[in-house]
Image (tube, rainbow, N blue to C red; front, side, top):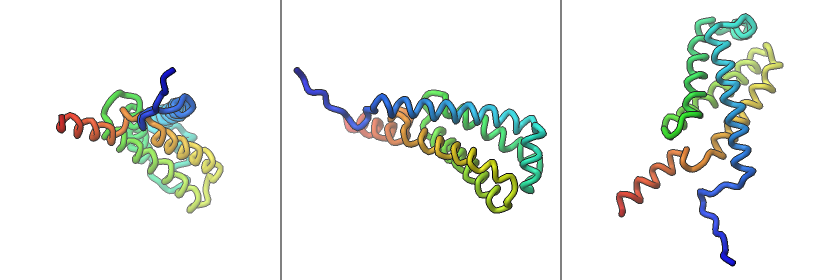
Amino acid sequence: MTAITKTPDMRTRAQMTTYWVATALLVAELTLGGIWDVLRVPLVRNVVTHLGYPTYFLVLLGTWKLLGAAALVVPRLPLVKEWAYAGIFFVYSGAIVSHLTTGKDVQEVPICSIMLVLTVASWALRPAVRTLHKREHDRHISVAE
């Protein structure tokens, strides 16, 4: 009988399942929300103007959401993924702050909070091959060999 040793890169099945569920939900919301933003769907347009933002902001925000969703699903590109996670974090945390400081449409805060938690979960549980640190580690090993 041989002992199985876990390396730091190995994840449990629960961690991988949580990562993929969080990422899938995040990508789905970013995609749908991005499309709604770019199209300036009346429901979304009303919330954004109620918060005091111009409607053209929706096109910028929607484009960033769609690019962020794409960055999370494509293989490789760990640096792009890091930037995407940062941007997504700013989108949802900014939305929470906007709603709370204006006191308008505060019913959106729980949804934005859930999306923020999914963003952090996806980032924290991502496989090592999807992290920038893993790529730098591999590069240092190959240079040393």
